[in-house]
Image (cartoon, rainbow, N blue to C red; front, top):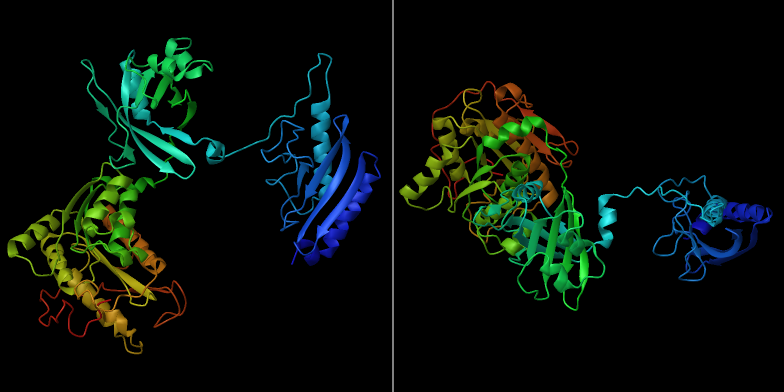
Length: 563
C-alpha cells in the first residue's frame, strides 16, 4: 500500500500546505500526479526564485513522511545551483540528514527558494552570492568517485623522505574490486647508498604483484616532477620522463611526496592520465590496552575447524602474534558453512589455510603447524614432536572434539604447567560450554572435564539430544555431521576467545570467577531462554592423578558426553 493510501490525512496536509504557499504569490502552479497502481506521487511546481521561473518536480519517496521528498528541475540536465547532486536533485538545508516528520513540502520549497535567491543575487562588484556548503561526508562517501586508489604506509613515506633526492621503484600489490583498483605499496628499491626497504607490516600475499610499474620520489613546488603531477598539458611520456629514464611503455604509476602530502597519477595508453587518490592511514587505537600483554604469547590451537579457526583469528586481531596450529583435516566445500576460511583455501589443509589467513590479518604473525591427527595413528616420534611443542606454549586451546586428543593435551597441560582452555558446541546448535584449567588454580583439564560431565548428569536434568555425543573429530568421514549454524558456533567461539585471552593475562586480572560455563542459545534441554548461562563450580574438585581406563573406539570415554 502506498504512503498516500496508508496516511490519507498526511496527503491532505501536503495538498493544503502547497495551496497555502501558492497564495503567497511566488509559487505559480501546483500540479499533483498520483499513480495509485504504481504507488507513486509527485508534484510539478512552477515557482519564482533567483530572478526567474523554475519548473520543478517534487518527488515523494515510498516511505514518506519518514524521508524527505526530492526537488529536481523538470527538464533533465538543467543545473540551477552549485548545491546540486549529480542526479540533478537540489541539496537543500532541509535534507536527508536533518529531516523530521514535522517537515513537509512547503519546507522543501522555501529552502529551495532561499538557496536560489541567494545564489542569484549580485553584489556591487558583480559577484554572485554564495551559500556555504554544509556537506559532512565520510571518507568512504568521498572515495566513491575515485576508482584508482593507493595505500602508502607512514613508514614508507618516512623512508622516502629520509632518502632525499632520487627516484625509487615502488613495489606494488594490486587488488581489483567491482568499483575500484587498490594498489598497496609494500616496499621501495635500493641503490648503492640505500638498501631495499620492505614494509613488514603488510602481508606479502595481498593482491597481485605489480613489480616495476611504479616510481616514487620526493618533490618540491615547481620542480619537473611536481609539474609532471600537476600539469594538465603534459603527455604521459613527458610525465614519466620526469621520474625515470626508462622508456614509457603505456602502463605506469608515478608518485610524489610533497612535505608529507602525496600526489599520484596513473599513466596509460592513448596518452590517458588518471589521478590516483591516496588512502589515509587510520591511526585510531581500537583494542583495549589490557590486550598489550597478549603480543608476546604463543598459543596452540588444537583443531582448525569451525571453532578453532574462529578463535585463532579473533586472538590474532586481539594481539596474539605466535601460533602453533594442530589439525590433519583438509578444507572442503561443505566446511564453508561454519569455518572462517573460504573458497581460496578449499583443498588445502585447514592448518595451512588458517596460517595464511592469520598472516593476512597481521603480517608479523609467526605460525608453526603440525599437520596430523592428535590422538590418531602416527609414530611415537611424530607425536612427541607435537607434544614437545605444546609444552613451550603459553596456552593450549583445545577444540578438536576428539577424546584421545583431549587426553594428550590435558597431560601436557598438567605435567608442564601450561594453562588450557577448551570449548564444545552441542550437536543441534542449542548451546555449548567453555572451560579452563590453570596450573595451581584449577585441577587438571581431565578432572575439570569429568566434573562437567558429572554436572550434565545432575539429577532432574533431561537427557541432552542424542547427537551431542558424537565425536566430530575422530570418526570416519561418513559419520553424521554436527548440525549447527555458523552463528551458533560463533557465539560459543567468541566466549572461548575471551576465556583464552583472560587466561593469558594471568590470574590477578581474571574476569571469570568460575572455571566452566554452560551457555544456552535457545530454550532447549536445561536452558530456559537464549543466553541462559550456567556456571559450574569445580573449586572443590581434587586432582585424580588417574588416567581413565575405559577408552571407547574413536577416543571418547565410556558414559561421557563428548559434544
